[in-house]
Amino acid sequence: MVYVYNLNNLDLIANFFAENIMTRLVFSAYCPHRNMPEYLCWSSSLSTGVFSVLDVKKMGIVAQDVYAHKSQILKLSLNYQSNLLATMSCGGTQIKIWKLPSVECIQVLSRGLFSDTSPIQSLTFSRDSAFLLNTGDDGSYLLFLVD
Image (cartoon, rainbow, N blue to C red):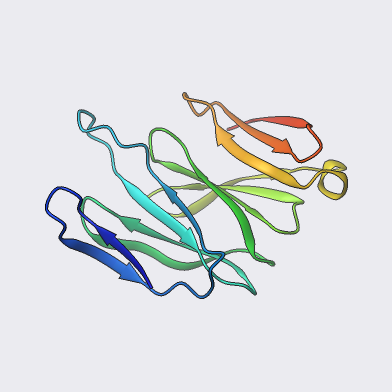
């Protein structure tokens, strides 16, 4: 089980079952002075590329077990504004960008020839969300324009 607590008062906000110890988690950037959503996104399936989204402020599930990829999700990344989520599977050929909170796939990016030769190391949005940077284990960098 994964438990999410409010660290101010140690109240339990949410809990969910993690299918395996390789559960991928990503949190929104926290800034108490901004009026933006705060999400916890995770993928815990060993067999399929599904993810779930929890709205931490509203303490409710936004989406559960959204089918994103054919194989297990390797990386998740939220942008600074907490309105975009990038997912990438272990297959490594496609990166998908999802609009939050509607959980609508708005863009599919292809890693092309790099998918076989360079396993993914990281997946990160630029601060203004105009770009998505993908780095590979071999030191390669792919910079994608986010529509």
